[in-house]
Image 1: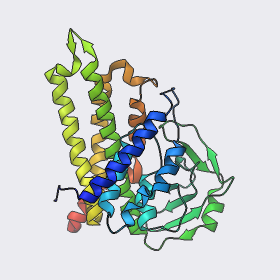
Image 2 (image 1 turned 45 degrees about the vertical axis):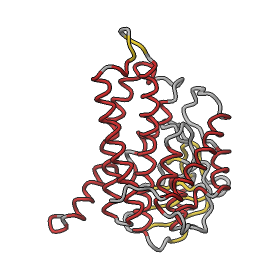
Image 3 (image 1 turned 60 degrees about the vertical axis):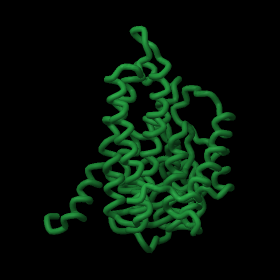
Length: 308
């Protein structure tokens, strides 16, 4: 595996960091809102072309992976992952933001209330539908993302269009989930690292205790491994790599979040600190496309088909 990032990608991420820094500088302070959508930033990312990187020859899927990871690591919420992979590589003519429904199409999903298109993914088929005025109903937001459900799933399904390559859509969604989840966890870890450097207890910074350092180092190494697995899956085009990356990160998330909230103490359980903007998102992403159990079973079936 090549761990050297192309210079073009570094330049792209440098430009993205500047845009994200501007968005953070002008963003509202944490106000206790359980969910939100940074609409102005979402539009700026689309206008600047950052979400089209996967389909551009000079950048490609590795750049898209890095873009999604960088955006997801910030305390802002935009629809970047689905657009960067599914729209860029499978549905280039469809409007964004894009929401995704799998399994039962009457359930709530993230970004549906602000989406202009929705992907309806079954086990062996995929369809896409444009969202119109009263197609969605907002639901109770529990996961920091804006959540909504279809008002009439049957009507939406009836006017939807077949997506020719359902396997491609599923693989791209797995890669998108892996990239978004690795970015979310990295952002949460950074926030906690800053906290333990400054929070003093027993006459010293919390981060100076070896036990705290050890557990945060374990979190960091796990997240870094997931980050590179996601990038590998983006570049290789392999379904095995995609389910491995998503499954590894989904399986690791609960342990990482436990430690991060533990070291934040009571502050990490409030809406006045931005940790929830990462941890709430991660709690929803762990169930994407069947969760770790489904992904790791699929990894085994692909690697050892004779035992499946």
